[in-house]
Image 1 (spheres, rainbow, N blue to C red):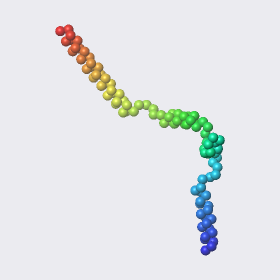
Image 2 (image 1 turned 45 degrees about the horizontal axis):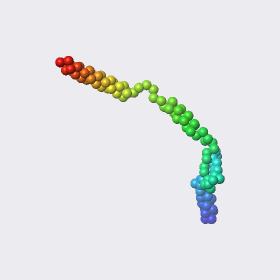
Image 3 (image 1 turned 135 degrees about the vertical axis):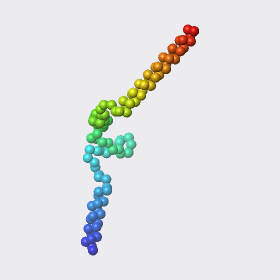
Image 4 (image 1 turned 60 degrees about the vertical axis):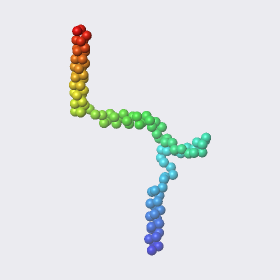
Length: 104
């Protein structure tokens, strides 16, 4: 009975350490500011974080770039072209009618 209690306590102690935060992270340092007493976490290994992220974004854009045109874009372009032609025809007829009235 005592053996089971001791084993249960040992098991609980071993599993409790898994839920605690580690005392020091690799690659991170905690620095104390002289002007304020607050401590802040700075990542020493990521001093060029913005440059690295921009490079990763460019690589992903290059990797997932879509090649060619989709059918939807082709259909939309044709529809826009016909609309432009109709508008041009309407404007041409409109000016033809007004020019004829002025001469009469």
